[in-house]
Length: 322
Image (cartoon, rainbow, N blue to C red; front, side, top):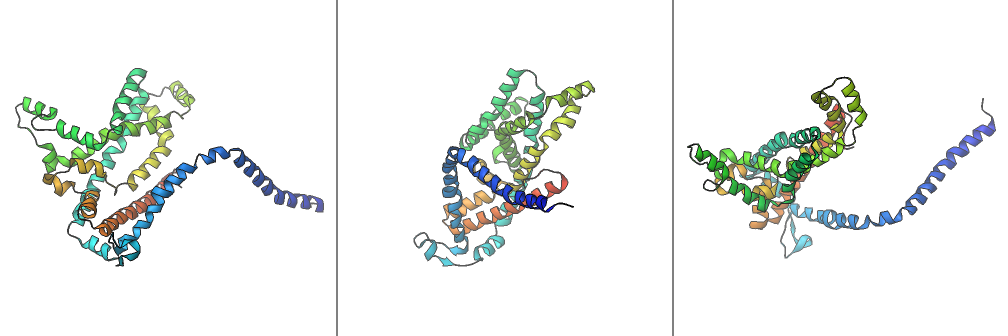
């Protein structure tokens, strides 16, 4: 049985220990105060440009007129949402958005992982760095320029692809204005632009793998494919899971810059997506309330998708966002 002195000492320790830890934490924070000051511009940026504009969501429930402002515009409740879901063009653009985004997820998401695994096996450093540089350069070029390059590359009169096709005696193909090719062009050009940049993330994850694991695998006689499957892939799986959650969450957020610069009247039925539809309604026709309703709908769906994907990832493996 514990003596009264021991019980009193333990109670005193339990009472005093949190206070000591709190004081140590305050001293530690004060010692690093200049690093916290560096966060002020970042916090101000997000408050001003990301959180303050959230107030504008309310115009989705109004008939907003710029001259009357948010406070003077008429409240209409869910009228714009009813108009959105019963609109003639909404279901086709939603279908196009989901199809294009799903194609990008199926073919675009594994592309940087595969490139990363290949580059990790390359032993010629110069070749490896050259491939990395060439593949991530398109990330820094806007879709205004890249769209022009794609259109010129696929041109029926000047494009390289059609020059090769005609060299074999076939007729040129109007790739960019043909509905059968347009979605493939979107997916392939998207992979071309982002595959190199996304590869950096996975290569960075591979650098954390313990080299002794590969040495042990060599001693066991494991080949390259076996080491990739048993060491490299499990090591980068947390990063892959998190990137996949983000990718699924963005499945409803189509790439407006890319599609707007490649879209034309001939492929409107397969290429018009929610963002281009919102642009036509909100900016061209000036219906700001309806455009905000569409944007709010997209964000709610994206949020739900992230929650569901994170839940599934948490249930199927140990990696998740929270």
